[in-house]
Image (cartoon, rainbow, N blue to C red; front, side, top):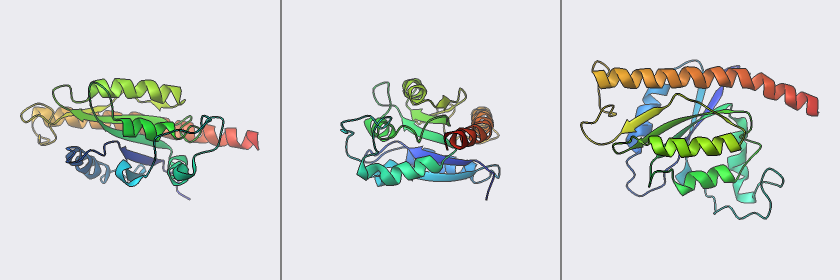
Length: 199
């Protein structure tokens, strides 16, 4: 059994013609070089969830039948990277819906954010998302990656590592991963102790 943390990367856009594919490809390339964790990518386009309408919160009731497979994926993860665009100063409804369908599967796990957008690089969406992660008893990681998809704006995903924008992006990514994996490694044994005590 692997002792490496398992990180679920959740792509939170289902928009037609979405521009975030370039961000996910960039992230996949970066994560492929790491040997200190395992990574699984989930595209919310492939998770058929209706809008959450259960009579009871998943914190108090069962997971909706259509969310059972999603619950299993989230439950197996030791931490998360949420890839989100910014729509109207916030993150997409489809990502909020995926979060709302579950509760216990998120609890006491760290969540990092890679945001993207225009001039703001999605930072306002990330701030909104952090509020929800706290309510789910997650540990939002302070360090994040923000990517502008406006040509010529630093740090753009096309910026090379030997350019100032690329160096900034490297520092952001490495800082985010250091914190995410620190928390993943710290919280996993704590959750295991909780499960043992609860029987």
